[in-house]
Image 1: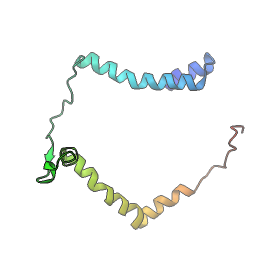
Image 2: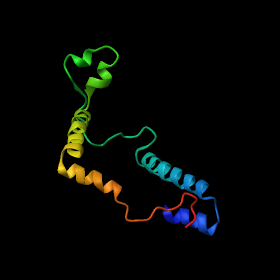
Image 3: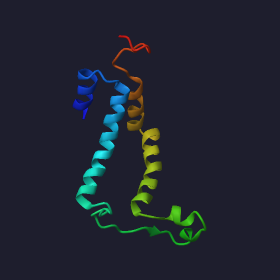
Image 4: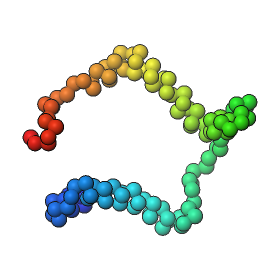
Length: 117
């Protein structure tokens, strides 16, 4: 897709914003078109078997928010459990300190905001 973008911008002298938007939309729509050709308009959904939602007893019966928060697939609960673990790794370990410190090391000089080099 970058070759299409380059051909439009350099070869046809198209506006970079318009060409970039068009290429991005084409990248978003193309997989949908291929999916519909392969599985039809109704779609086949996921071909992998699904275990279904895991209902947390008591909490899933809470009105309004119970089914939305406490009747989710197991991967949702696993992702929620990883959040404090990742926080702890980033802010309480030597590895996390080293990782956060790399953000402040820029090997390139600051460029002016005007875009001229």
